[in-house]
Image 1 (cartoon, rainbow, N blue to C red):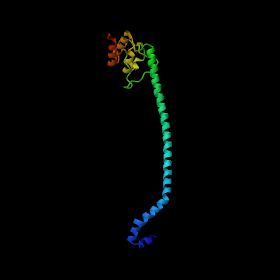
Image 2: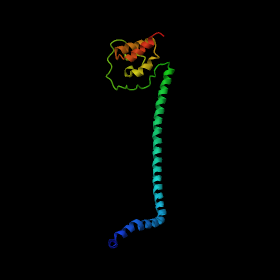
Image 3: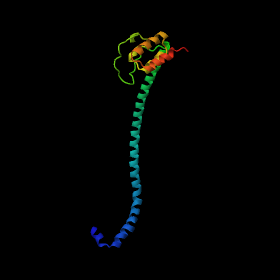
Image 4: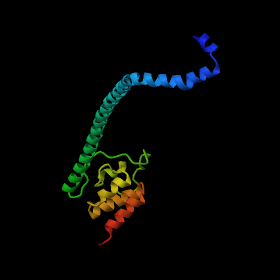
Length: 175
């Protein structure tokens, strides 16, 4: 076959590529087009089916994870509301069975022994030494004048947090 192509002149070769090949392609395409379309359709349908299954698995997994997160959030909010309700029910006294949260600054050195005033165990706020200032502030609202003074003395002789001492000053001022 290649021997025949070599014997043909350039004009015959150009006619093959420019005239006869496109005509032959057009005739063959008319016969092959339905088969090619069916092959393409089958391939695309298969890919769509795989993508649909993968999408359904991803949605189920996402729903499961979202359910877990929602459950955790619901438990945390429920615990916070329960603690708040217990605090309100006790007249503003903090709930004694609520665990203390760690401070944002991380662990600190043990507090110094008292130099004056009451010890932490006698304060109206349980586990006072383990609380951050942000945890102490809301608990000050329900204290009596004597309890506030005891907390002031203890805070001033230990950590000396200005936010806590300032809040106590604010609460002790006459209205």
